[in-house]
Amino acid sequence: MNAASMQNLVSNQKDYFSKGATLPVSNRIAALKQLERTLKAHEQDIYDALFADLGKSETESYMCELGLVYSELSYMLRYTKKFSKNRRVSTPLAQAVSHSFVKPSPRGVTLIMSPWNYPLLLTLDPLIDALAAGNTAVIKPSAYAPATSHVLETVINEAFDPAHVCVISGGREENQWLLEQEFDYIFFTGSQAVGKEVLRHAAEHLTPVALELGGKSPCIVDRTANIALAARRIVFGKYLNCGQTCVAPDYICCDASIADALIDALKKEIQRQFGEKPLENTAYGHIINQKHFARLSHLLEQDPIAFGGNRDSQQLKIEPTLLYPCNWDSASMQDEIFGPLLPIIPYQSLEQTLQQINARPHPLALYIFSQDRATVDHIIEQCPFGGGCINDTIIHLATTQMGFGGVGASGMGAYHGKVGFDAFSHHKSIVDKKTFLDLPMRYQPYTSLAQKLIRLFLH
Image 1 (cartoon, rainbow, N blue to C red):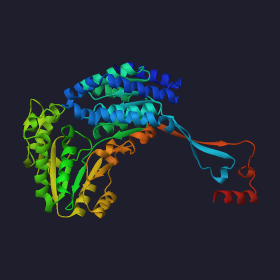
Image 2 (image 1 turned 60 degrees about the horizontal axis):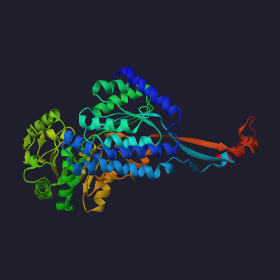
Image 3 (image 1 turned 90 degrees about the vertical axis):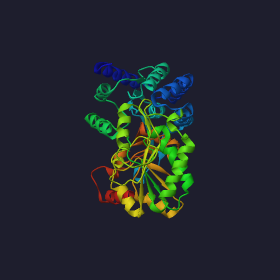
Image 4 (image 1 turned 135 degrees about the vertical axis):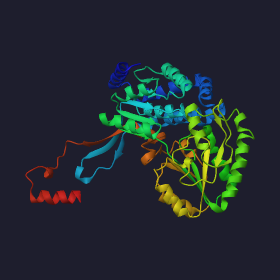
């Protein structure tokens, strides 16, 4: 597909949207149900594709991708009708004899650009929100996950008219051509570098965007933490999908007095969850490609390894690895790791640690392991971050009742559930003024009485 055909595709979607086909709530619900049926028909194809691209087991694929997609579908099927209704709001006295309401309206033709690390979930979750809100969508999955992209294309082609939803395959050239088109909304999930390009192109058309980016998400473990449970939950969150998760704990800051105990507990949990030989564990995934394997291998050669560190270049696998002791100048602390390497920085002063965290770009997530409520509240108050957990990792993104998104360098905008519906909607503010009474005070000529009444009504 070239630039001209993409322009034609977007034009067809604009025509489809302008005819009002996506406006009836019944049509939106029918589209969601059709997507659900088609996904169920291709479940095994999805599992095979995720294993081919990332080495994900069927259990992990359902728990972290397909199951969450079904959850978002169920939620939107239940609440789309409610979310689509006008919401009446209070009318000020100055606007007497009228009523005011907010009308959710679809944005129009949307572009959804998704990443390779959760290629199904991070494509279909925003699509579900877009469909529930009454939009059309052009989907551009990552070229780094070709098997999943192919299945997505099959599913979307079976479920939808291309004028409603379509998939564009390809790499950077296709991305460039797409970003030159004029959309009504762009939803991008990926790296900060590409996010800047998306924002730059969107500015040419004054197109609103949501950017779901990443960053170095800290995990703070204080001296009051339940060490064994903290280790278990950190290992789960960090090494899920072989560490290739945007909200994975990127590094640990732990009180120096419990550092040795925490490292021992982390070692035990790695062995417990992945076995004595993780590289031979078929349920443990692999790095997406040779480029990222080489990048992570280079980091392994620069920082001290406390545990793990073995790798298999043929399978593109790297063991769950602990890097210790690390500091803020360590090689692994300069950029988001996005792999199974976990730097551990011991601290003497929590306040100084918070200053170091806050001096860096705001993270997408932050995790706190502590049984001291005052400490927890202080960290949450002091640190800017997108979202997070207290005494757990990652699970906050699986809650449809809360929005998921970043702040500052980790993104803008949010989605999931009602927040996702709102992200793909424009909320029209409308006053419905009655005609049987018209207060004359706002019209010229202004009298002294009119001035007094205006002050009375508006004060």
